Image (cartoon, rainbow, N blue to C red; front, side, top):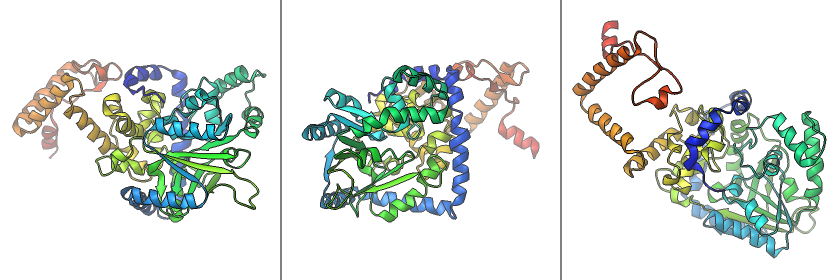
Length: 468
């Protein structure tokens, strides 16, 4: 997927002005946010489960090479082939090579954000292989000119029923339907013949399990079965190298958190643990199984300031609760991963110079850290990225000079007190007796869109002294 993060500000302006999108994004708070709040109460010790998940994820990441070797050994023993890709482009080439080796003309795909990193659909089409998305949301995006997903769990959350109804009528050449069960039946009727004629199935992997050489796939539609059981003879798993877990017990711990944090469910409708290709006596399953494990910048985070980001389980809770994401949606971020997680991952994977605005796309309110099931300190990581931008002179010179001036004053208490007194009195004068300030010199980025509450004309110290 081409990086478009440098156009963040322009895209944000468009999304904020899109009233239909603003209405559609309200589904995040009415469904996912409230659902999570209810679902986590079902756990006897939610915080204890989170602590256990953190420990298990970090045990794998800090010994990643060891657990990957164990996984490779056990997956190979089970009959699968394990391949490693240094970059997303390398991973796409490996999948295309597998397709050519087996004479594949059509491939079914289950939702995978790593395949978005790889621009896999484009690579398959260029090689003469027709990709067919099996996830309903991803299918909707595919027939809409291969539109990018806007959310990692609900890829089509930015569209409403009417938009999808219009799209189906245009692409399927059928009468326009607005009843959701009828629309899903129509999609099923269009897709099932494609599923039954596919030669290869491609899935992501929520996790790979080292002790058994297995892949764990979590879905709500059961669509992974269209890629792994019937009828494809070849199953290819594409996932990041950081997704390894040492044991099935580790997976069980994380699974208690994943659906609750993602969609507010106690458990997803389908949880599949697949180990190797079909064996003698098996009634179904692929004849060949491959794992393509992608680095794509992940090893660069190990042992560094952003290592904790690798334990992300891709639940989407941070974006569901983020006040910024809730207003601008996922497409504004310009790459695969949106929201707070994307504001850290994108600069880390594609270079901070290619995503200058993403670390700034946060109020640092801390909500993302509070709801993260594996306690990733996202606000701290965003602050570190901001510091690196300043250190490398990637921020505008006026911004850097302003921060230098503030730091100079803040380090000198007497000067800070004097500046505060002058500042609050000036702002009170600027308000002209009103409760808000509608225009503020050198801060039009704020007052162009919202009013600034007018101060009382006294500093906090002065007000505190009066109260005492």
